[in-house]
Length: 197
Image 1 (cartoon, helix red, strand yellow):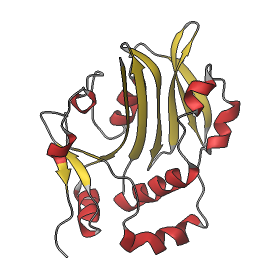
Image 2 (tube, one colour):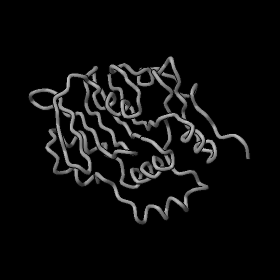
Image 3 (cartoon, one colour):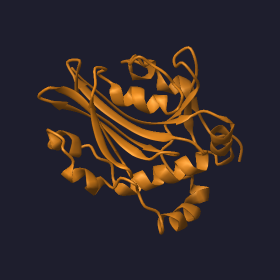
Image 4 (cartoon, helix red, strand yellow):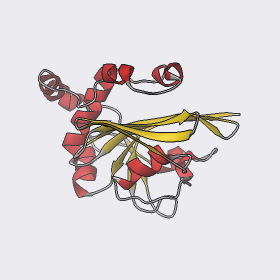
């Protein structure tokens, strides 16, 4: 059976919550006990009221890890991964949002088949900009990290090492179990809709 997710996550603090509410942006507000600490999700784009500001910002913006840079990466089964890469425009929008929120914002994607990982990766924006990829090699899974400082790779034992690592950057520690990624999780129970005019 196939399971997959593509979701954005951000740290829940006064600045990020205040900005989202002031700009009337919908989001999911996850709270304990379903997550160890408060976490925001479902932040996908610039609010209409800020589109002009975003367009001006994009003119001089750059990504620390451009999608094209990953083409030469030492990854097996690139076809499996590259079929899932987001468009550069979305990545720039998420980078802008991370700056507005004042903290890390991650685009996370994963798919499993019969309980085995088919792919797992994230783009992380904020204080440190990086791409994490969980790739299966003949000797086992490895966590690949790409950033402005270069690339590094290390063996991993946790099946969802990308999720664990990116949540840790938001000060959320999990051993791999994560309730919002369980089948049947009711995301709508945590939706915060804009209020007011």
